[in-house]
Image (cartoon, rainbow, N blue to C red; front, side, top):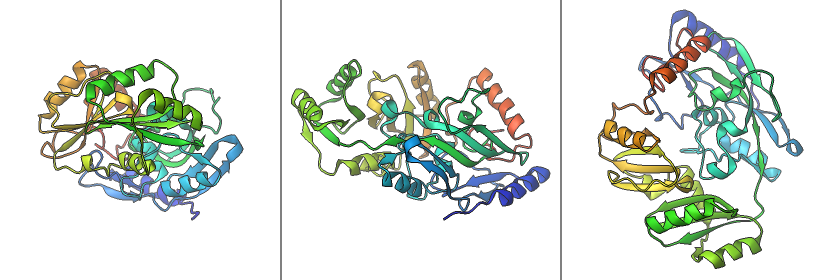
Length: 355
């Protein structure tokens, strides 16, 4: 599908700004749970704004409209043996590329293959004044002024509607297999620390339910040598495991308790207030279920040098999704919001109350 809805979207934003009408920017709706949606917001549907605008496999860059489904983008890349290196989650299958960039979420390979912002080369956005703005470009060496395109990664649509994104892509690995080792959390952490200190072909690492999963990418002989040195067994259908981890469809995520996402130093031990936990990103990201109070969770995680998101709410529904900002950083966010969206109509309160 190829459809340019720029002028329709621009007209909607212009009218909303004039009337002070809040808008909820929605692509596929797969991340509607993530953050707060204003009760009086009207839906600005960008899901029909689709199409691959430019793709030259030899250049490892693709430019697409924001409403293009992730599945479409990944299928186009796969035909040329390429992939989105940040492995964006789908959460149900209707995710769009614009939503993936706006949410700023990355899959299991993030420490080894990069985050969304690392591969975002350029954007075309519709800001809260209904202005069409272009930042960045389609090459890695683009140093003309500030790199404002990366502001849009993780901004949750609060600074602008993503009309187009240009992304650096990567070749699909020729060989990728997963080694499963039945070891305890202490031994798993020791092994991960050792692996970080030397060149190894790891492309993802997850520990859950007394088992460490190591995804390895490289030549078969290299993978066999790693297996011989570290033990464990090769998984069958391992790609399914990593996709289910990415999309939160593993049994671990099926719980009525609050689900927290903790970004912590990679040597952080499992926290004692967690009722259940899964360690991703080689130790740098912990997913936990807990009934502990939100303030307590965030205080403990802050003391470790990390931050905590209440990713999906259980009983603590009023705690806010994102880790509170300090005064200086919150002020910077507010000033950016006032420049891009002075009327405050684009996803107001999606990240923090009041802006």
